[in-house]
Image 1 (cartoon, rainbow, N blue to C red):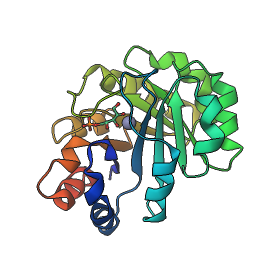
Image 2: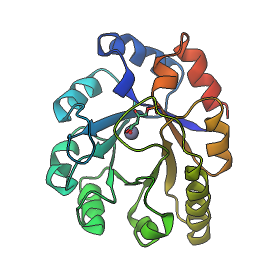
Image 3: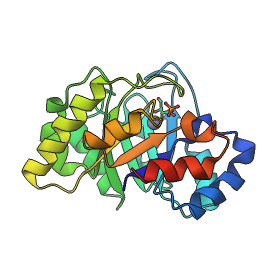
Length: 214
Ligand code: DX5
Ligand code: ZN
């Protein structure tokens, strides 16, 4: 069974309280929170105060995806509300030190790669990762088309995780829908981030259940 992490980036925030109840009813595994600074990606979303508010209304673990420049500067701030805290390999922080900084807060760490990064570049950091996130779109916006090049990256990371006997989860983010989800799971993904596919659907509960059944 695949884990699902709905991305609230495309949610109607005024509806979110009711949608969180629906997510809890259908056993959503995590809630994906996209933090963008307008520098690392060409878009601005929300920051720690919003995540802290959302967290007060739900028991679903917060899966925080930092798309910000030099993220080590903000780890301590986001660690207050994140259950899994991820940042980009390409964002200009010391990767090993930042992963350790996250784990020192007693929360789970996640390292994320953009489509331009090859999986082999992060192999050395896998022992410090509780999760690796493979972007299947250019980070910055919801509603983009799934890039099939992510599948090979997932396969390579899955093979390396198995080879070393690590318990690191593998997450994929961007363009997940009913066509892309089974391909990502077959390539080794454990956790599927889904934004527009979930929030734009007419029956959120049914959509979540379909994806989790994979
Ligand atoms: C994009 C974000 C994604 C986005 C996914 O930069 O990281 O999490 O919300 O949205 P969809 O599922 O619509 O591609
Ligand atoms: Zn994301």
